[in-house]
Length: 226
Image (cartoon, rainbow, N blue to C red; front, side, top):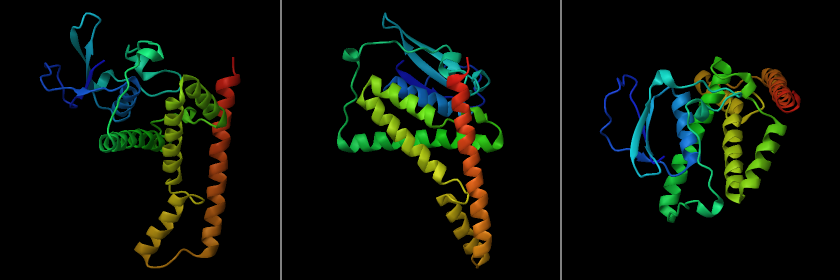
């Protein structure tokens, strides 16, 4: 896999003449694919075979699989990584400025995909089975640590982004709820009464406990069910 290009929604299968964006790694490709699937946007891949020949494979919007906990969207599209030993991995070496720009793009992409999946929980586009709890976190942390310290640090960064986005959800007990209070004060010109805030805090606490229990239930069902 050497190149990626997003396709317009009205793509009709015409030859692609524009230059493809380089794909630095399989993990980067996975996030670009998740961005396309959650954003319902078609894409094209430029691939290179063992003989050095290049081929282009396009996926229209109607070809994209849904995001479900039971299936991998890459495998659903017939894309499988080539397993190579760590000694044959290509290292991406960037200077400080380029590394900052590259990291910013990756954080933006991951945040965008995570936000779409989070909003989908409330709109019905994302199944509640996608929620994972402490067992899922521990399992993925252990698997990433087995691969190496770089994937483990990347997993920690992913968790930080997810927690940050969750904290911005406009629910009482979260920072997003406080921002909602501030927005109300800015629009209405007065603060929400202390008694009402206390009631909303209780509702937010119950909602968070419910989400935590649902995530734990999904974990138990995922790891303990035959």
